[in-house]
Image (cartoon, rainbow, N blue to C red; front, side, top):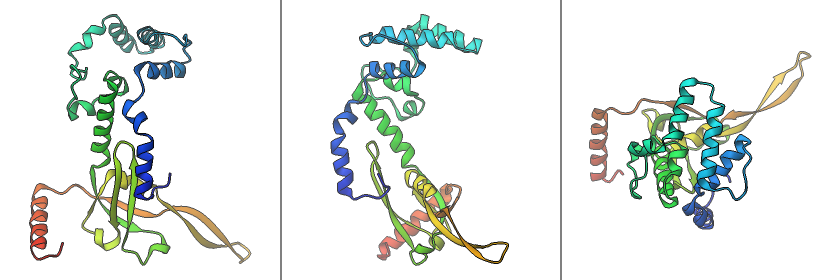
Amino acid sequence: MSDENTEQDFEEEAAASEDAFDNGPTRLESLKQKANAMGLKHSPNIGEETLAQKIKEEETKFSKDPLEQKAVQTKTLAPEAKTSDPKVPRKGETPSLEEMLLMDTDDVLEYPPHLRTRIIRAVQRHQGLKLIRCQIYNNNPAKNDLKGEILTVSNKYIGVVRKFIPFGEDTEKGYHVPQILYDMLKRRKYQRVTTVKNLDGTERVVQSMTPEYTINVLPPLTQTELNELAIRQAAAERVGLV
C-alpha cells in the first residue's frame, strides 16, 4: 500500500479486516508458529498446554547462560509463581498503559483475544502518535514551490492519521509531527539526477535515490515554553488568526 490513499480506501481496508483484527490469533496458533520457527516437531492435534511445555523444555535445553537456564527451569516447574506478576490477567481486566508498555508477546498472549486487541491498539497509539519536535527541509527540487504537503498513513490499530506538514522556514522554531508521520518522512526518497564529467571531458548522467527531506530533531519544549505557546495561541484565536 502506498503512503497516501483516499479515506475511502482506508475505510474499506479496515472493514475488510475487522473480524480477523478483533479476534486475533489464538494462543495455540501462536505456540504452533513458535514451535515451527524452532524446528520443533509436534502433532497437528497437540494440546495447548502440552505444546507450551515442549517449547519450554526446548528453550531450557539450548540455553547457554546458566542463570538464564535456571530461570527457565524455575518458570517451568513452578508456573504458579507468576501469579504475583502485575502483568498477569486479572479476571479479564484491561491493564494500565504502564503495564502494557512493559509487556512482551508472551505476556499479551495470556489475555483473551478481545483484550489483546485493546492492548496492541493502546500501545501502538501511544507510540505512533507521540509528537516529535523537529525542523524539516525539502531536498526535492520538484517541490521547491511548495510550503508543505499533506501526509496520510494508516494501519488497522491506529487508524488514519492525516496532517499538513510544512517545511522550510515555517519549521525553524520546531514543528510537532506525530511519530508515525515522522517515520514516513524519514523513509521518503526522490530520484536525484546529476551530471558528472568523465576523464575525457565528456559528461554522463548519474541517478541516485536521495532522502527527500533533511530533518533535525529538536528537544521537547520546556513547561515554560509550553505555557508561553498556549498564551500566544489563545491570543491568536481571540483575534481570529487561527
